Length: 153
Image 1: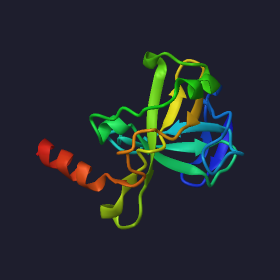
Image 2: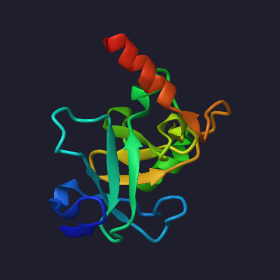
Image 3: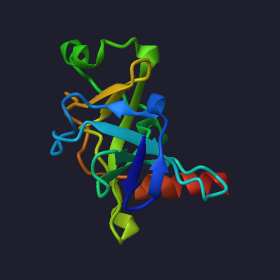
């Protein structure tokens, strides 16, 4: 599928790489087809990728694997909810969280409260609200990235 995007220009995504959100994403329920896009211009692949709508060129959400920023991330989600995406086995689930990346990078946050759950077998996905009371909507990830960078040096 060929799609026009604001940030990446024209992209050609193979059909077997498309991710379908039967119920859309919170706030964007009308958008159903997405793809994960990585910045391939960089030498190293960034831990941040983009969930790009194939239907709306302006809709691209920065996403990250929550384990990259919070080692003990285990969202509590009712089994009933995952029926919508085929009740995947734990080994067939990919979890991502959306990010907010303002011009002041020290205010960069991730939404740990509303993870995106992807069934990697049938490529169906959904965004859910985790029942964990301690998971923040605006979890500051700038501090986490700084700590990781300091450990590497």
